[in-house]
Length: 254
Image 1 (tube, helix red, strand yellow):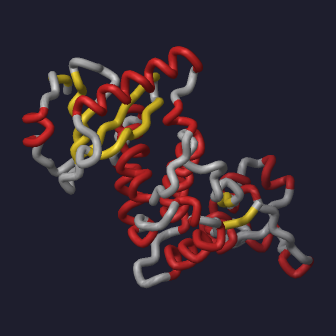
Image 2: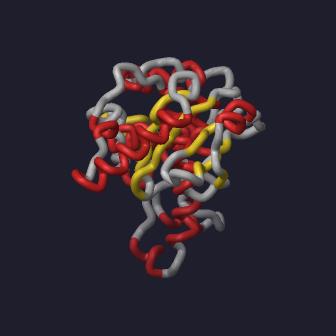
């Protein structure tokens, strides 16, 4: 939404159920962002998907925000990167990353972008006030164990999607020069389909024993003859349903 911002609009802009932005018609790279909590800030964008927050309304007037926005765009035109994108804030919590950077970017760039920061807030509320440089592998390993085994445990697939949202937000923080590197890039989820399961002689069975009863070989290796006859897909499906190994998606450090 674009409008000629003035002091009255900035002062009287009311919070809504969801955060929203008002684009300044006088300088189109500047926005007034109003959080659902009532907090107001000045994001500036200088290229597609490139933005930073200048500061809050409490610390910057409209005129000051316009001046800083113009300077940022001018620096981008001259050198390709504004000075504010090169500087690193001395303190940035996960909550600040989501509110001031990741959520505006996700809404603008991703279909259904609101769901991603919302998901991070709902599954990691205890991380919101932590500095993003303090979010490390041991911290997330503890989170992972609690997420899949705690009182409100979820499936590993759901926990993996939760983790991917947070890792994506931290990857964006690297691009925005908020941190030097993503501390979670060394963690990945290894799918069961890609893992090899070693079997001993005691695991082998004859195809006749399974097929003679009209059933598949109950999670055991299938002879080549059975595969050639087209019985392999049914037996493979039976294995995936019955083998506990097939459901595992552990958190691995790689």
